[in-house]
Length: 417
Image (tube, rainbow, N blue to C red; front, side, top):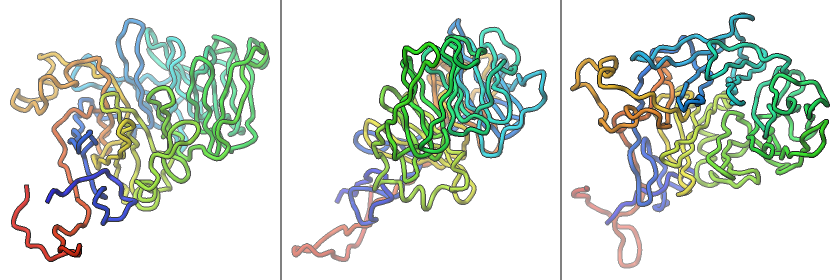
């Protein structure tokens, strides 16, 4: 008898032989499961708990990695191994004061990388020539930032959690209302703004209980209008928003996981009840972070479990299947690997025999976006390019043999392979 390890669907009965309730550290493939890889740390430890992580591409085609903590902003120095963190916080204004539970919201605008958080002025640095972040002139305090066409947008403004405000056309430092398209919109439905996904034509604005389209207009005093896309559903975890392509927007809502502005359920009767009622610590929904693995077509959600440890669940959007990993990581993102020379290997490994990765690993290739994250215990940045993780799979409870009448029979198990 063949015992099938079906899709991970803990919401279903444990006697359903077409699914499994336990599949740890493996990812879906067309005809079964494949192993995930362990995190391979390559950086020094960050000074404090990471509260934001992003990748910025320079005008010359290079990559720079930035991370934020409660009080500082850092850039990864890839000239020496293991990679140290360079403090690139603002020189004027003192340490930042990121509110508890919040994370840095990073967005690219032209050659600038901007960081938003509610307690301080938006920060910016030129990724080509800047050495330190600085306060963005004239910009409003906001929890989230995104780009809509040629406009920089700030969402969830101080004292106005349902407000969206945008800059003047092609100028991130000009915010005077009704000048060159700069304006604001208080959205009087759906509760607080939870983030936005920008495009050339506008943006999709997510609130706690609604989703709206931010659309271009021909009005020179107010460049955008707002239209309800979904008045019944939004996201309860703002950093769970992830984009994999046109129409492929993923997020965690009040009753489970969804895709797209119309709210297509992707976790119903599969993992939603298990995740919300048994797995995640609901006091830390703000910590849920999503990132898209560009190679496996999986969007991963990192979160804090009820026992305090960290874990990830992933959704393979082409196979419509879920997976789970208990590797203790936080602040996941798709980051380009810096690349290593043979001479640089001794910074990570004492001897050539200690190298625990294949020599064609993406870690050594450089410039290839790969899933990365911080070790939740040491705060070291690494890529998921290490050894295969230990896998646990459990089948459904099933009778191995039945009588001619179709009733289960006692079975003596002599072997398995």
